[in-house]
Image (cartoon, rainbow, N blue to C red; front, side, top):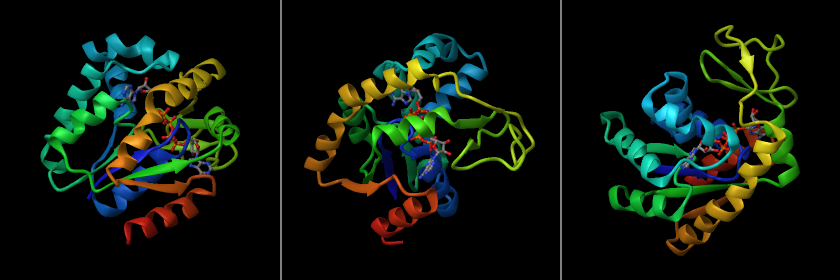
Length: 209
Ligand code: AP5
């Protein structure tokens, strides 16, 4: 299976893609995570993209396509993958189509008010990267990861200003991909607004699993 999870910031791409990838033993390839790791490790790429990421702008296509190309060339991605956050522009989608025949693009649909509530309440473990939400998926102990006892922090791009920018960027640059993939018969719309377990069950149904 070569899948793409598509949807606006906060739609639940990471949450659902992560679970599906773990359950099906497929690599979960999140461009956001790859970029955040580069920033954390102070690599040349990380230094170059820090300000863009924090402000909610997209990383240039040339850099993004190269990062994904290298990741998908690794052995674990040969049998399939679950992409999350890529592609986000038409040039990225064109580049992906030259190297991979996608099985399906799962388009998670969630309204703006819910997206803002999810992003502003998200907390991420600095050690293992697991995502929580102060209301919808709270940790047992405030600001402590249930899994590894790491500290939970707010992402730098989860500020009000950055969230608004990300939603604008999604509408102008990323949303046109829905028609791009619909024309290819590859889009499956999924209501992303119910609780995560229900969204996951709907995704499995679409995939016939
Ligand atoms: P990225 O990390 O991809 O961020 P995003 O697309 O803005 O998506 P998010 O991670 O914010 O949300 P999500 O849909 O994964 O939701 P999540 O599951 O976390 O990208 C970050 C930045 O990197 C970009 O702004 C850009 O700068 C750069 N970048 C990345 N890819 C790029 C590309 N291809 N090209 C160029 N630049 C790129 O859930 C959110 C919260 O809601 C969590 O707290 C979660 O617990 C909760 N939640 C999830 N599902 C549910 C549910 N069903 N019910 C209730 N709560 C839920």
